[in-house]
Length: 316
Image (cartoon, rainbow, N blue to C red; front, side, top):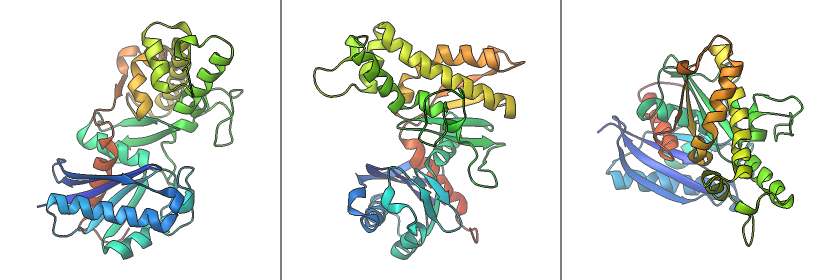
């Protein structure tokens, strides 16, 4: 049976699936990443997770493994150049270490890119679309003419770092006013904490600890004006970013993924309003802004697609 193994490597968990050639998930594995224990432990967990998923699926051997990683890749060396949630892996020869341990060919790709491949294959994607991930940060994966487009430097599709306000708040990338500075889970929580300190966030202020994106979203759905303002601000930033990509590439389809995409309904009116105000020559009916159909499975399915597409090919 033709099958591939895909891994979604996160700062907290390793999520793995054995996937058939038609895109059906045959078996899964999930286990802690254990970043604090160092690169060798992370590698051991990746190897064990791939073996467990393959065994549960009844695969006799695994020839190729696709892995989505959260960070900036050096594709030639098979290593991470930057990875805020996986610091022990920065500069570590991840691909070669995994290939030695598994005997399989290993393909590394940015996690948002593999999520875009997953949505293209089995989800809400199409031949031309941008997937944007709304989580701790904001990422992006670009599909053009049915293929993942990474650009000559491997950095295409970085939607989170499109600048939408040159005088906006600082972003982790070093610039100011990026989409990520307004529309990540961290930025929503920053706004929520500021509202609570100012006495405007009673509807989502917890009795103990910190507010969560979920509690702010619940307050917004219940009609709290401050919570709604926070999500409208995030929506405006996303809309401005979408308008920029539409003007450059004439893209009409956008797919939101990640934990904060659960609140897309709260952001969508502001997204649409901003897109139409900024995307010259386009009308509202020209755009489809959708929530991911695959949810957390987008990453493992896209990584498995990488593995399946690479089987039988030579070289990297």
